[in-house]
Length: 377
Ligand SMILES: *[C@@H]1O[C@H](CO)[C@@H](O)[C@H](O)[C@H]1NC(C)=O
Ligand SMILES: *[C@@H]1O[C@H](CO)[C@@H](O)[C@H](O)[C@H]1NC(C)=O
Ligand SMILES: *[C@@H]1O[C@H](CO)[C@@H](O)[C@H](O)[C@H]1NC(C)=O
Ligand SMILES: *[C@@H]1O[C@H](CO)[C@@H](O)[C@H](O)[C@H]1NC(C)=O
Ligand SMILES: *[C@@H]1O[C@H](CO)[C@@H](O)[C@H](O)[C@H]1NC(C)=O
Ligand SMILES: *[C@@H]1O[C@H](CO)[C@@H](O)[C@H](O)[C@H]1NC(C)=O
Ligand SMILES: *[C@@H]1O[C@H](CO)[C@@H](O)[C@H](O)[C@H]1NC(C)=O
Ligand SMILES: *[C@@H]1O[C@H](CO)[C@@H](O)[C@H](O)[C@H]1NC(C)=O
Image 1 (cartoon, rainbow, N blue to C red):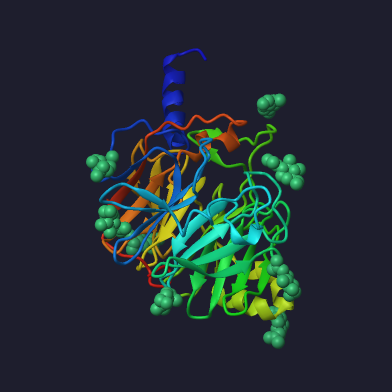
Image 2 (spheres, helix red, strand yellow; image 1 turned 90 degrees about the vertical axis):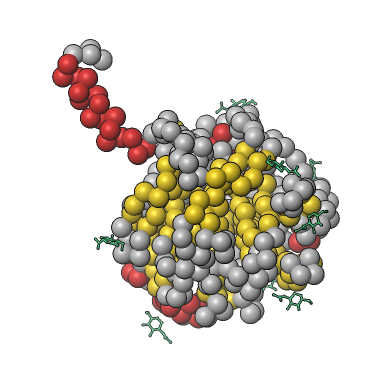
């Protein structure tokens, strides 16, 4: 480009309008505090009301070892959770009794720790059907698995069982499938499931995921789409918010999802009942607070967007250290936990090479509001 006076001002104008989709090089925000310093990427943290802390290691840096650990904040020691056996899946292990690849973990409204196991040994590898994909529930008092929900009937070989949220008012849980676009409705009592909004515009991804200004690619060089991924249930249980990882947050009243569980005619026409909620960017993770505000991490430009209950988006914080903040968490001290996992720099998106730069950080920021009781204890 010729840098005439005119083209420079045009260039600056373009830079300003595009800044939301670019890597952010601005100053650190002093409100962002370092909670944990890690050697490997963690894509989820959760805490119990009495302050116990659980971490999920994403293992996208080529490291091996336990996926789920309890983290001791006085000693910095990590212990495989619920134990080493569950965290050791080897060729020949029973897929239903071991964590194969855990994509998310969270304390639920019942106080148990819920682990979402994709059931495929590596990112992009086929799911081990039928016994691989599952939801594993751990009682954190006994530190033992108290229930396993098999998800083999709700998943396909190319599924990526992603995350779970709960509707304690109705006894249903909802899961996202980021590999074969749909939502899964789970009856927590019976364990029965339904797939809905299959390949719907709201669960499908019209663009690949983007991070630090670049579209992600899979190992075969193709663009990386990540379908239905983030989801949140409103604190009154009325709404489910959900989106693919490249953004575009939709919402649907949970009563239509719950009725669809029994009414297959309604399930066929569910798309009539979902609506756009917010035009979110490529996202690593979300969280919801007791006031029905949704927090969304922007993987391109290192910021956290807060979405008010009327759907208006506002900037909560922007900080160059917020590199692919994945699943966020709100503790009972009114802190938002932000695991900066650098996932886009990991092996799945760089043909097997890791560009993750340790140490990795889990940050917190005060948000002045606690978690939703429907979200977790
Ligand atoms: C952390 O480790 C210390 C020292 O071993 C122990 O006393 C404490 O109970 C541990 N805390 C948790 C939450 O496990
Ligand atoms: C735990 O880790 C933090 C951050 O790296 C460090 O400041 C602290 O000294 C560590 N504590 C112990 C007991 O090693
Ligand atoms: C695991 O077992 C399968 C079938 O038994 C075999 O094809 C595969 O090579 C084994 N993989 C490893 C890593 O040993
Ligand atoms: C966990 O186990 C303890 C001890 O058996 C029991 O009292 C408690 O109700 C269990 N928690 C949940 C959430 O089921
Ligand atoms: C799938 O559904 C059938 C029929 O309800 C049931 O027998 C089977 O155990 C289920 N399998 C899994 C892996 O969920
Ligand atoms: C990925 O790496 C393998 C070798 O490890 C190579 O054969 C392949 O062409 C690479 N793929 C792309 C898209 O660069
Ligand atoms: C099932 O849903 C369809 C479509 O919304 C509706 O017309 C029908 O009345 C429903 N059936 C029952 C038994 O509620
Ligand atoms: C949405 O809610 C926020 C927070 O209450 C408020 O500041 C904003 O003006 C509202 N926007 C609209 C369009 O009503």
